[in-house]
Length: 316
Image 1 (cartoon, rainbow, N blue to C red):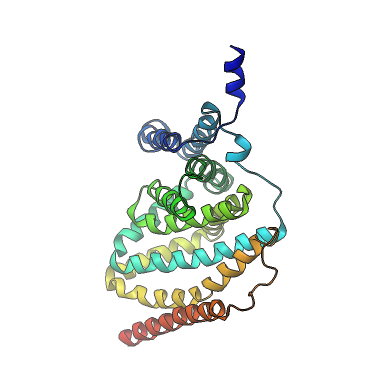
Image 2 (cartoon, rainbow, N blue to C red; image 1 turned 135 degrees about the vertical axis):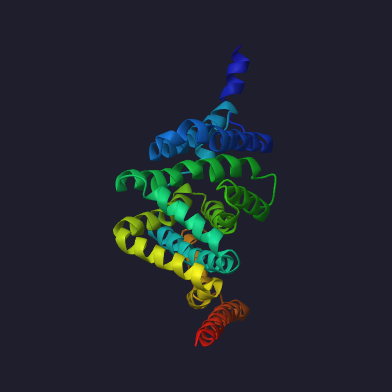
């Protein structure tokens, strides 16, 4: 009996099957139980669903005798890490927006429908309730599940990028829409990268929080303007087709030229407190790195400029 008690106290690394089982239980809650039992409660039901995901993630660690501190590593964040996380989010957001706009060229009605659905669900309750449900709770609960329990079950058994890609893709799939999959998966990969490189969940939680908080704040702050703009965009899309999105694609491509630099500088900043990491932003003896960043940015800007002028010329 004493031996069994000692074995229970020993912390064990999570196994892959345990992480997969945790995801399966979470999927049943999200896609089977929640639509039936929680959807009648609206935003409160969504918040309860997030809390259930956190309970499953933390409960799995306890059930399988994992180390809570190792699975959910929370440390005091540094200013450089916070600044780096914000820059990485900016670069990632620009890339996601370009991808969404490109998708809207081919699937304008579907993308508009997805955006309408998201806006309606966000604005379904008071601001504070929406902010807690959409911005705060996913940054804690979803990160605990995907970057906490699931990533921990893969770590040490698969390579870094295999873990990040798998967890990012599954994160995208859990959002339940094919048109949200790619941008959400990209965000999932970047949040996994933040955790992997820093060993601190505060940074990927911050990334998730900013990503969700911004649309909530903008939607409530500009609700009337947004509604009129939404009606205008819908009328334009139905009347003239997807080609009207080309100028926006061009503009966002030009804006996305800042993404490589933002992500690169952000990556440097999140490592600023890492012992042994380089002290210079641009390491000496590696001109190819600087040239690559410049060429990548120039390519995006030139492509955006070309798309913008071609689209404007076609309208004249």
